[in-house]
Each structure stands twice: as structure tokens, then as C-alpha cells.
Image (tube, rainbow, N blue to C red; front, side, top):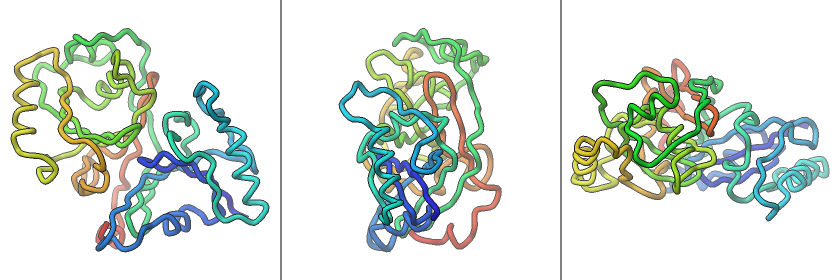
Length: 274
């Protein structure tokens, strides 16, 4: 019997399943993309038998994710098709090394497997303060500072959903997000967008944010939109969907990985709504 342990974001649940990736996607689907919105990103996690091949990150003892995961996988042996291991906050406590495969899931349950997550940055320096300039952030990660910076749009999917305009490159942004005092993320998953999702906010929100980043050198990010971003931003708006380097970034305070789009996206998947 095939078994998978799947982490879904932005929902944050971890579920054991004997249905396979596509079967689970259909099982969790709310229905047709014409009527419902229910996109997800699936990470297929490393397991062997009824045991995860990784250790969850410490959460302070408010739950026992290892035991809950073992029990969920054991339930498959007893005949269950799906069994929830963690119902929330799964991304922040699952180490990046546990991610074996990554899939984009449309509302109707159609899946697209992304290319393996290659490492695009390693972080050796961890000293960060609120007033760093973008070039100082670049220096902190060992990159060369840019002379001219064009603001970029990032859609963060986990640990919370929001769209932010930033003067930082993806590698710089991931470092800053996982080190920034007061607003630090333990881990982060995000995609870069190639155009403004103008239907989600007033045009002035984008204009004012760009003006702010240009006028204040120490200002590195400005949030534009919060909540339910994955369902409301076209997948074609992701950098890398049609050409070039891009996809889904996943990082922590030590490194950043990129799960990139395949060279050719199947036409049947591309045309499906949702």
C-alpha cells in the first residue's frame, strides 16, 4: 500500500494518506474551479513505514507532533485512507529537509509537480537590525549590493498570507524575514509576482508603497494586501510560470530553496480553471 505524509500550505495541516498525491488533492478539493476557490501547495514529506524520517522543530511542548504523526501513519495500516497528523502550523515546525516533492494544486484537485528544491542561498550571518539598508542586507548574506533597485512584489503563503512590495531580492528578503527583530518568521514560503494584482487593492496602495521605498533608504518592505492571496492571484502572475527563474521559495534562517516550474507546463493543467 502506497503511503504519503503531506504538508499543505497555506492551511498548514499535515495528513497521512493512502490515496497518493493526486488522490488526496481530489479528496480535499471543494469542487469545480468555476464555483469554488481552494488552491494549495503540497509538500510530500520523508517517511519510512509508519515513521517520519525527520524530527519536527521544537514548539514548546504544547503538542507531540512526532507521536501524532506516527499514529496517523499507523492508522493507514489499519485501513484509513486519510488521517490528520497536524491540523495547523505544520509549515513552521516541519524542517525544510523533510520536503521531498512539491506540488501546486488547483481547486478541482489537479496537481502540477515542481522541479526539486535547489538551494539558491546559504546564510552564515545572523545579525540583523531594523534600520539596515538593502545593500547592508545584501552584504550580510554575502551578495553584492545593487546600485539601482527596482521594487519587487512577493506573495507570502506561509506562515501567513500577504503580498508585500520590497526593495530586496528573493535571497535578501528571505534572510530579512527570518531575522527581522519583532516580526521574525521561523520559516517562510513565498513566490515573486511579475505584475501588480490590481484587483486586490486600490492603485494608490501600490503607488504609495513604491514612493515610500524610493524616498526612505532604510525602508525595505511595505505590505499591500493581507489574507487569501493564493486563491486570488493568477498562477500565471508568478515569476517563472511562463519563462525565467522563479517558482516557490522556501527558506529558514540558514538557507533558501527554490522549487521551480517545469520547462513546459502541461496544457491540460494550464487550462483548468481554479
